[in-house]
Length: 143
Image (cartoon, rainbow, N blue to C red; front, top):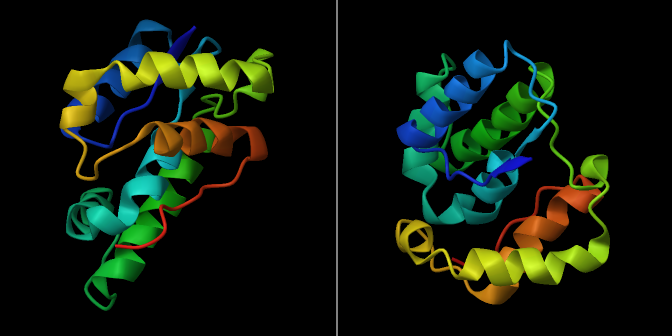
């Protein structure tokens, strides 16, 4: 199984397209957490997410940047669902008690974490991994 935790960069989206292409559109072993990551960090990169929303073919002309970034997360989640990419850890029979180990592994990914528009602490990463169990996109509180 591959877990994609991309932050929505062009590289992340290219990797997603590559996974789809190499598996003939079947991605049973690919779990994409991009909507959960983007939802969590949304308030730290609203402009970038507004641009992604526009790049996806939607118009943000009449929207505040905050609303456009929120809609971007909703559309990303819908995209993952529409192409049948699994988006829950439960779907892979990963138990809730595995979250600590996943979090410990993720916190060691210094290169990836350094590129985040928001500093992510261990608690943040845990919340990001936890959100797919509940199928709820959570946001980091505060700005």
